[in-house]
Image (cartoon, rainbow, N blue to C red; front, side):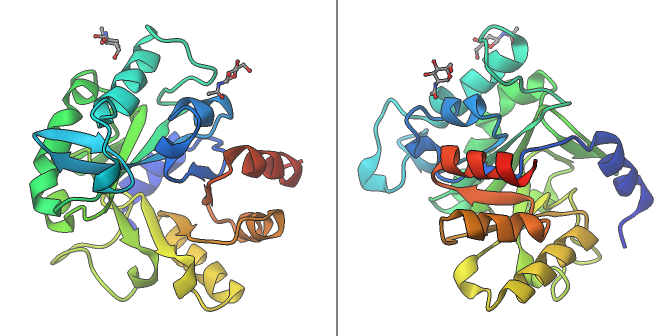
Length: 256
Ligand SMILES: *[C@@H]1O[C@H](CO)[C@@H](O)[C@H](O)[C@H]1NC(C)=O
Ligand SMILES: *[C@@H]1O[C@H](CO)[C@@H](O)[C@H](O)[C@H]1NC(C)=O
């Protein structure tokens, strides 16, 4: 079971969030802004550590030197939070953004550069942080996926880069010796939908994640209204969207 202080933190910071995640967000017409225009508060960037920079691209062959984690995401996010850039949807503790950073290059090598890149947001006090046994909601929750090294995430005494757990293994594994899965390590747990055998299994996985206070996400799903509705009906928290406008329209109907 979750310690009470974590449950209390979850309750006190709960906000109504549109259950939509902008998958490979950097491929949108305008990265970050296409999602924010639709009040979609979860975005994902694939990140490559190369030539001492963190580039955002799908493959290493597609690296464009102007597209870095900072230029596409971190700088505009800071500007929106500090009011120097106006946004159709605010980013704040009350309306937080989840930023998924998909480590494409080696995990242990990429980890420290990502932490360094987060320094301006950290210095402003804008990151969700776990320290001294307390999870404190910030305007931005950063979750590492892909090659993100779990051991490094756990070793951080003040943690503001969290982990995307394997939703199938929450009950069968522990994140580390003497530790339990929870939002202070993994606010999010995901899996490739191809490895889920049935809707019933998906529903069970969503319940499992919620038992641990963790939000669920399935990727590589079919892209149609019936599928999205099945996930929302199961209480799945972040429906993976490639066509963010279509999913947003479907949510408006489902939610009404
Ligand atoms: C965001 O919405 C505004 C106003 O509706 C529109 O002018 C702009 O093109 C949109 N931007 C994106 C990236 O969707
Ligand atoms: C506000 O954000 C902008 C854009 O990232 C940045 O250049 C500026 O230094 C920030 N100002 C403060 C006070 O954080």
